[in-house]
Image 1 (cartoon, one colour):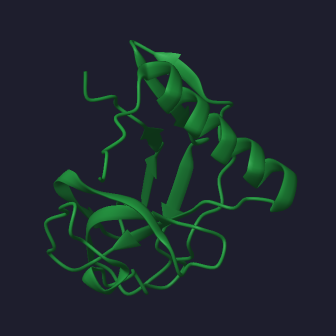
Image 2 (tube, rainbow, N blue to C red):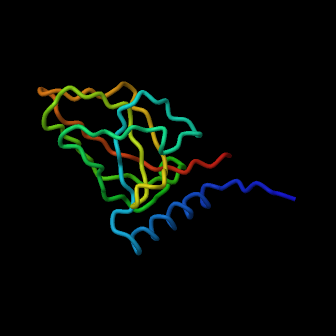
Image 3 (cartoon, rainbow, N blue to C red):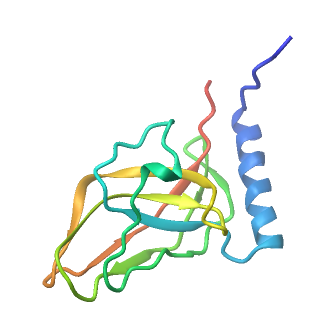
Length: 139
């Protein structure tokens, strides 16, 4: 018989803390943040193949620092430092969202669409964001 495990708030926090502790112990900057430039709507079925990573001049995936996981408003959360992406030429570019991978860039951890596409231009070449990874219990 198969049984589905539903994480409690404490269980979700423990899971996120274990993932954070592992990456702090074993790999520096294990979670990478990427921008994508194709008009893809993120769903739970999205895969790395769903995204076209930005490739404009000056772009590179970011390796932010992350806060120690904590429960915020009842939801286990870890938040990145502020990440600034800056395009250096060949404007404009349209960026539809971001995704997070492991250190190998081969495992998708999560993704999100921006509420409106971010268009970088020569008069506004930079975009700053923070990313929160949350584990929301189903209760």
